[in-house]
Image (cartoon, one colour):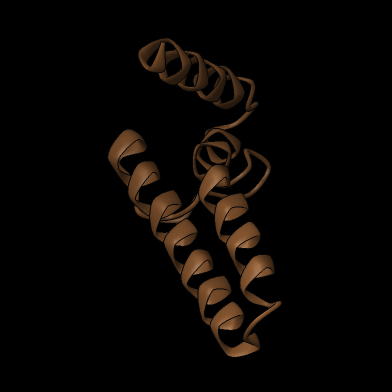
Length: 91
């Protein structure tokens, strides 16, 4: 039963990612669960200690940024974020 739930959650996550229009939105959607989880933990921690809450929020933001950077670089081979087609490409 646990494997079925895990596969279902993984399938929903992949479907959520695939609905992104651009490479950047797909990468953002892939890392979005990290952002949500750290926000929930930060909200819970804020009831006891604001310093811990702030630390968790900052750590979550850094982890989300690292996730977006590493996935984008791995999949698209570029370290920078996706630029819209209307913006001039610089090299």
